[in-house]
Length: 408
Ligand SMILES: *Cc1c(COP(=O)(O)O)cnc(C)c1O
Image (cartoon, rainbow, N blue to C red; front, side):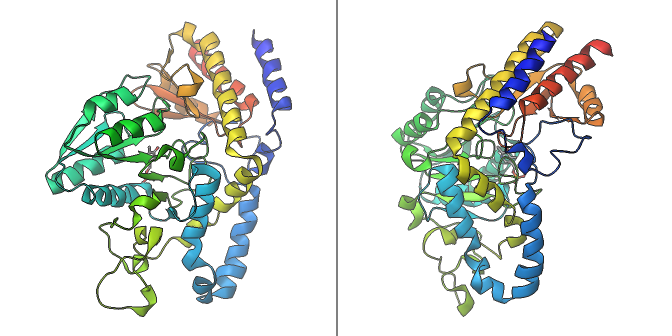
């Protein structure tokens, strides 16, 4: 069985339409890194990024100095935003901007959305949402005197359109959900969830951190109101790279966010009295955007624009299917539990498995250059980044987990 799987992994790598892409990443030839299975937490840097950052330093920052703002940087959040919109989000131009962390953008968009539904007193969210989403909605609810209505989710599942339909009412202002659940990997039916939200007259804010760059997204077609997402996961922007925000064109004229900074004001360099929001998506910006952090995102966008998200998603499904098959054969007999959906149509780019010894085993795997991550209470997440992960890495990762469970 083992050699069968080894043959399969080599065949899958040889026939992979994206087989040339793993070599585009720095460290792909580093023998110390046997299997990197955490691209959903921190994507790898591309080789092109090393050059782009060096050029930015010497020619951009070092050469253009303050002139760089006028020449390029002032518009860079919107320029890169539009590229993310077109290549990754299914969003027409003028609706996406880059800046701040996901946490801060979630706050700004959630507050802005609440202001569009005056008189409504509830926000719907789920227990399995990412901690930052839960905490800051708790903060907003406490500031504004709102009620949080929690959807309980199944451990290996996620939020269904039906559960949303049951939770919303004429009191609901906003629904905030992750497109792909950070723990289980459950991929929600965003179009159906959005329809259920709108049926109650509420607005939907989607967190795309775990879906942007791994699953196909159609924000415009699904009629999503607001979205935010990371660029340091599947978009390989680097540790702490700024997040993106999407505000649907239909809401922009009435949308305001609570952090009124000069860079989101109309004509910021007039330094005028009184805040007047800039036209369009620029009003999401508060202070000076983190230009340095935006440089690497462009290299992953170059790659995604070459191949298209359909090919990226196809590779992602093939990787997670292989991981599930390996885990079912090798790990489930060792009392490991599958904690992700088995249906690839309902699964994002990672697979979570649970076992009481996984915390200790993850630490040993890291020493061996096998790098997944651990999520409490006892889960290993196998995160496969479609452009950089090989089937060989998936094989090596699951095999090492089996060895750890059987030999120690
Ligand atoms: C990674 C992640 C975040 C992270 O937010 P930061 O502000 O970048 O720390 C938020 N939400 C989800 C669903 C995530 O997966």
